[in-house]
Length: 80
Image 1: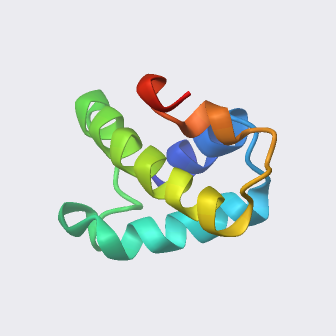
Image 2: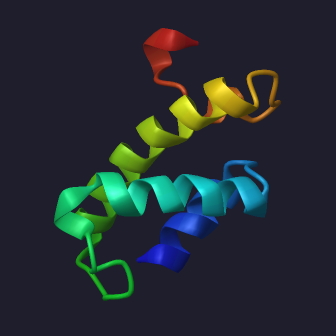
């Protein structure tokens, strides 16, 4: 799961160092996933985790990279 979500962050334009930082936050904040990031999960779990990680990513971007060109890739449609 970790590598899948990291790749998704990077495919949305986020540099690897920031993707790792976001995942470090997510690994602590997403309680159902604590200790389970290296397991193989059903696609539905990946999708639900991705939705939560995108929310964490936009908070990270707003706090650390507010002018990042890839910021809109993580925003919800209503926020664009």
